[in-house]
Image (cartoon, rainbow, N blue to C red; front, side):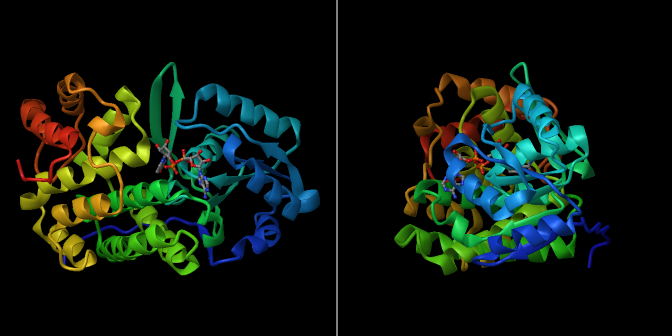
Length: 357
Ligand code: NAD
């Protein structure tokens, strides 16, 4: 047994198909009177249902959440919350909407209730990101951790199959890196392995029948576990590469995670054998990196950076950026690692199966 520190993070979780019906009770338990409902423009219809459920406790809807939380959107949302006399915000949607809720909480101290409809996991973390002048600033603050999370698998039935698979791979990435985190602990290991297992077994079922509530339920359960891991332990090379590719080259979040994960895991395999054993067990015995690659490929997810629109010329640039301020990694990364990372990224660009370079 390793020595460890485990810090539980307070959040109330209501899980189950139909659990949205408990919304009013949960808002009351937060001691709130008027909630502002946040969503993307695409999810306004579901936000309207939420506002209806809230009745007099609804302060209104702010349907302007977009990817990467632009500072102007966050400032406008805080202003609107104050104008409407809101004392709580409800974020219904994926990581982009939860991110807007977190920006409001950071500025105003208002409690956030999150209702996730993807598997990104932001609702379980105290990590926020705000983009100003094209630069995404991230940080940790306990005030941004949603106080209550309602996981209702019925709300994820409408998530398109393609995004369901990549979002599930995004969640798996949190758990996979959590298994070799330098500040990991046995509780997070249990959650990470179970989270990968639940998501990996749900993906084929969702692909066959996106309306399978049991499979959606398993995937959301996995997303909760993997999000908890992300919120509790440090991430490594995989997340650094994805932040570089998403931030500098504006590549789509869940898809980038899907493409990079097998290659980052192959890169770290020899340095983290225990983590590989657990990932492999969660994938039903397949070798970790190859198993993740096949999970994505078999279910129609993108497997190359090329198909996400990245140019080959940018691979070198990305490798140079990724070695600056590197995250801790089980296989050490330094400024002299650019050419090794370039090999990794080139393979990911081509979409070849992962090898330990
Ligand atoms: P997203 O929130 O941007 O959603 C993608 C699209 O899917 C949006 O148009 C959204 O409206 C739509 N959508 C979401 N759920 C749907 C559903 N059930 N049915 C139909 N459409 C639906 O995507 P995401 O991958 O969930 O989140 C990505 C963002 O979250 C990134 O900016 C990322 O940096 C951030 N994130 C942050 C953390 C954190 O801890 N801070 C963790 C994970 C992700």
